[in-house]
Image 1 (cartoon, rainbow, N blue to C red):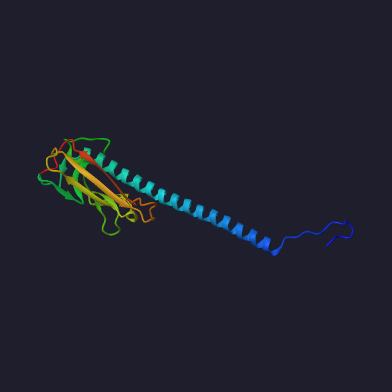
Image 2 (image 1 turned 45 degrees about the vertical axis):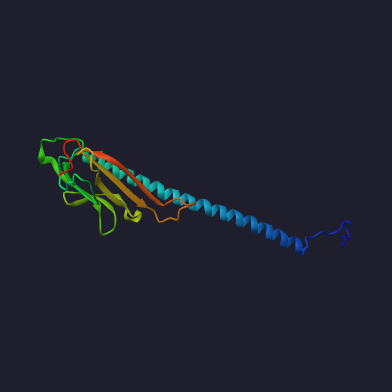
Amino acid sequence: MKNAKLGVAKKAFTLVEIIIVMVITGVVLLGITATSLFFIRQVTYNTERYNIYGQINYALEDIRLRCISAIQVNSFFNATGETRDNFEFEGEANLQNITPDDLSDNAIYRYQINPANGDLVLFKNGQITDILIEGRFFPSIEFEYIAGSPPNTLKVAITAAGDKIPFFGVSNEVVQGEVIRFWYIEVVG
């Protein structure tokens, strides 16, 4: 159809062209949405793993620092090797002032999983003083004396897992451990 004033033909999109554009736009938007969801899921998963690693490292550092000042073990291990899920010892209440000959400033420490909520906790003189790993990460801890090791060493292994779905076959379980050396005592009884 020609416009009477200008003498130009009037142009418009056909129904087929509009449907093709809508389909292409839908496919592009679907691709962008899927990619965004993938990256959001991956960031969420990696953030959770970062939190797990941070809490495990914090727990191992706390155990290492307090065990250095231990002057008496309340839960001895067999010389033939043994594994436990808790550990109790007496050590300095103030880690900045270690006085192995002064027993008046000591405290009884115990590391274990709190059965009420699954947290890995530190008890000091029978009271929970610190939550080392939150129960939402399903922590477990093992204290192990390995037969033949020096009697003043103890292997500590902490396992935790997130509830986010892992990618590409990666386990959502994180395991870290280290060998703790005691300065003043032996853990074998």
